[in-house]
Image 1 (cartoon, one colour):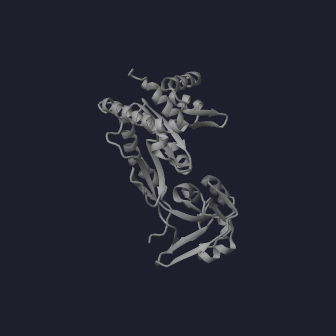
Image 2: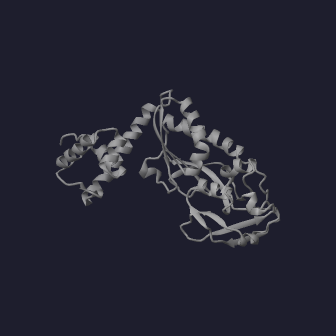
Image 3: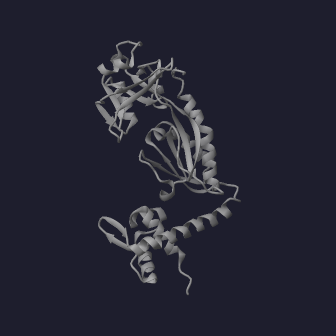
Length: 310
């Protein structure tokens, strides 16, 4: 049996993961025509059709789906072999893929990543900014930033970076100078909110004394963009719950104030997550170390708001 051209196996796996020949060609940094020809060669060598190509994208045949599982194993083995040599290199280099939600990217990474790139000029960063859940393994993400109370995924290493408290904010004009509001007073004020797929909009409060209170509300603005919420709150259009690292500057400048200074919302935690693998590549390792050092410092700079300590 002739030794197959494993390059075609890798191209097949990357194209399927990318979702189209065009996207796969961009990821592989190869001409689209070359990738298409390689896939045709692969099918001819195997004697079966692996992909249905249509105007709506690619669709695996049944045999193509089974074939893909083995190709992915070959890709993983090739990456592991590459790690053996790269781990002994002193200078981090190569591509790393980082994922972040919009809020962290626009508030922290925009300041931190230029410094990282200055320190490691031979590392190329691919930053995916999205609020959707990202599957690190399937999408080839090396490191992802998430804000959760906890991370429950045994396939990932979850490294807490810093607390990310959220607070209720409003423009001083909307609150009319009042600093003694009770959560029930919010019923008479317009609300702004992030989008929740459950369709349930509810505040869960804890008072300094330990008293707990749950309050449903109906927002007049719903969006996934925290900075739209921030600007809408500054304009006086409603009360909004935001992470302190988003609203800190607006509070310092007097554009926003705490709506309920004696009440706390549930605490979020910034996490850095990455696949559980032995021997991380040098470029990935220095990114992890850099974020572990710098993200807590950036978070601390945004926590100067006098939030309730409970």
